[in-house]
Image (tube, rainbow, N blue to C red):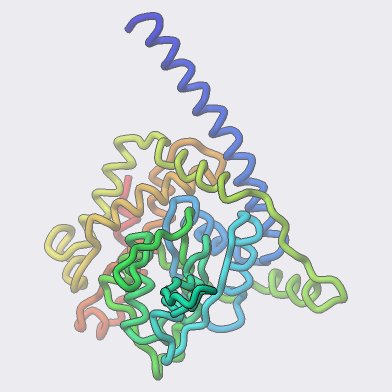
Length: 336
């Protein structure tokens, strides 16, 4: 390597190091700012941040009243994103999300169509109770999540960058809902299960949210900061042991490929997109934790939220009391 090439490589490494140092500070500040508003949901906050920093979309699953909406609103403020919320209902139409063309008449009397943008033209969209809308409306949103643009009357309209969807789903009340098909669930980088807070956290919620003053979110990043961090995530090194752990986990979760004692319970398993999601998510989790390279522990920690919605058990396995979480936990325990 020539002296010029050596200097260029050193300069590039220094630039990456400076970018990484700044990103670590901003991510730590964002996490602290979210924690000042959302109490007792550390894992949920971490997984939501991982989803956004990895550049993906998240599906929040939990019963009503667990601050899912509050979390999305807080993320929008803290990360400096233009955030909007859409309540999904059975009568919601694709145009209500994407937008539509309207006829306008100018001063000269000439008529022309003008596109009126829908709420999807936001940097962070909360799709509240996504399974309440019809499959046609769900598909309109999920197609946009994959392609990052919408097509109305034959015209393409690009979505803003960054663009993220955090959808919510109630796991209890299923009457009158339209469950998301497996191919559409695969568009979500992670399924984030929002559970009840512990006693200490719920006590803090009682005290700090029922008084005269209520904690409010404060910005800690900008949309440009987030996109810079997302680019950094894709540049972080991943060791061969971590790559092999991701491949081992994803492939072992497919029928006929792993340990027969476990795969006999699996009706269908995750595809290559799951491995891609896990690779990005482990890098993002390492960055949130103040590290510049992921470990096998990151793979274990993210195995369930990345794989859970990309697998299904056989009828016999469900009849025996098996759960997807249990199967994934046993697969993850074998790593390393």
